[in-house]
Image (cartoon, rainbow, N blue to C red; front, side, top):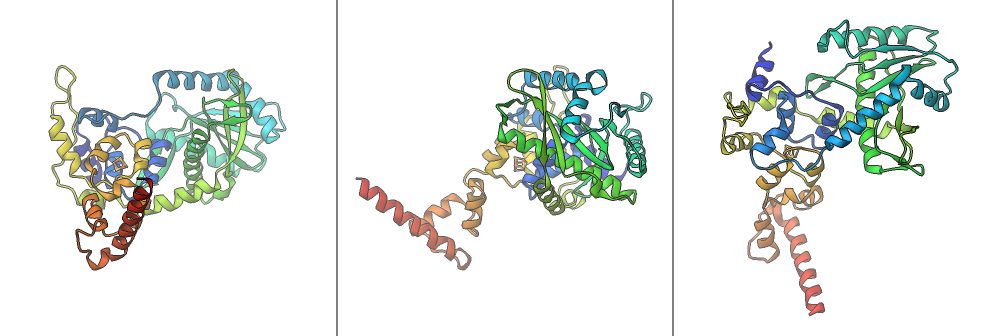
Length: 375
Ligand code: SF4
């Protein structure tokens, strides 16, 4: 175990680590300046349990019903050697042959360790990339690896990477419906950014092997149920924009070692349970430990991070908690109380607050005029 692994294990405590997923990486990049999320995810802390224990349970995530439905739909699409999926791929990608190769990479001879699974995926995918006349191959659950904040993380993709005519396509199977040709745009956007994480990881894998990363297409195949039936339908989605955003945001993530250096060496968020399954550390103790790690709360956290309600509570009274636009417009004015004092001209602005103070006074004047006009 490296020194870094030991520090992260101490922070996490006795629980087994939670694995990064494409969803957590996508969420991480929506708030790249947040050290708290970066540290908790690197340590594999169960954020959902932690948030519930400190009194601020998450209010988003998939219901058990949705997860079961998603698993059933994926099994249906992949049944009988991916028969349904193949007919969709023929239609969408012009698959010219009846049969294709298939590699199940979920385990390697019963060995499910990350290193072994990743090595196997890398061997088969790079071999296919080098083969000039590969007629087409499906790679089921290839275990990919991506550098996140200076640390290699494994991704357990719920997808199939498909190679045809020298190009790989990421296939993402989702259970939200496409009704009359339209799907929920928020869900499509989330699926697109998650698929972009896989495209990035596959490109990194090929580049490491001296192969052209661009052979992984920027067009992913999104498979969803059509209307209210379970009949699958495939759509090509261009994720070039998401790839640009991801690359930029991943580059902005601070290295995890630097974030850990700023924390006390004995800091722990251990959720070790007692005989009744309740964490032995009290909510106050864990809340205080959590508060030692810097956060950067923004309203977008509410739909992306399990501990958002804790962070929102902690940030109440801060202008930054009102959103990115307010944070930018009111640079130098940290608290809502100060903003109100400047708006009412009860406080004298410092030099760096002058611009924001002028804005606040103007807004206060407009508000007073508007209320006066309505009275
Ligand atoms: S909710 Fe808290 S920990 Fe999560 S990203 Fe936002 S500020 Fe960071």
